[in-house]
Image (cartoon, rainbow, N blue to C red; front, side, top):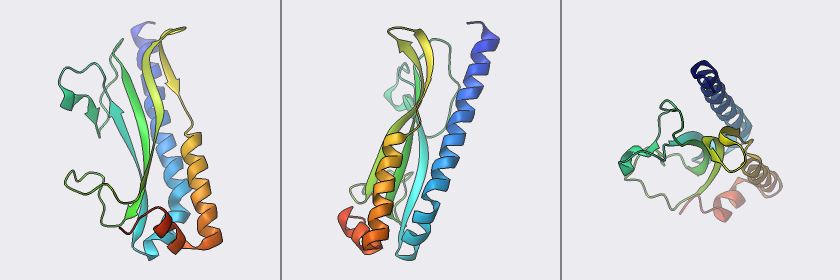
Length: 153
């Protein structure tokens, strides 16, 4: 793969990540609106992993860095249901309350059959779980969701 083709693929992957984050935020917007009335929220984030970094603290990032040729890269999407006081970015916060869904979104890595390849996923498992929560909320109310998923503890 030449440098221009590689860079084009990287840009397509970045655009896909941003598009999927926007779609997930739109998907949880109605749920989030109702949760906010009770002091809870649903929020979505992307996190990136750079597996070949020597320093452990450089392997994980809350901000996208460039993909390098033949160096592992992956992006995951996270959806969090919890208190409005909870901040995903505050490392001092207690993260045992609420529920968090993490799913692989994209990757550039070595594969058995294709060699170095770009991969994309559609977050079907997270969407399925969120649909279940929305159905439970519609059937039993927000209080049920708060208690079942321990959003208030």
